[in-house]
Length: 116
Image 1: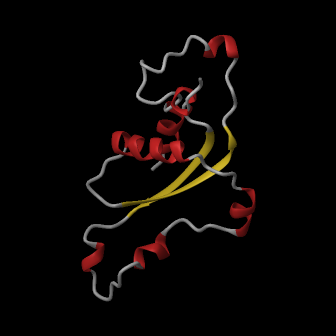
Image 2: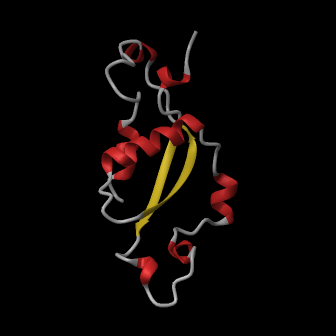
């Protein structure tokens, strides 16, 4: 039986983000949720073109952000799937062992987070 964790990351994920300024909640005139005005905008084209993101991919992204990002400041992330991740050559894929990495193909997430 094939389990989804053995396949690893399934979506070609694009991540946009922003880092919130220090003490943003204590600025004069701040209302809860004001930070959302700063978040990367989602257009109708984004919504129409977006593919479904597997919940395992979202869970893996959460873990990878904890590993990869510096968290002394709050961050907001926008996650969009650009479709399924290309499948590697089956011969090469058969040599991949799920006990060697915390998440198969997690390097795709780490690379996507480098610009944030």
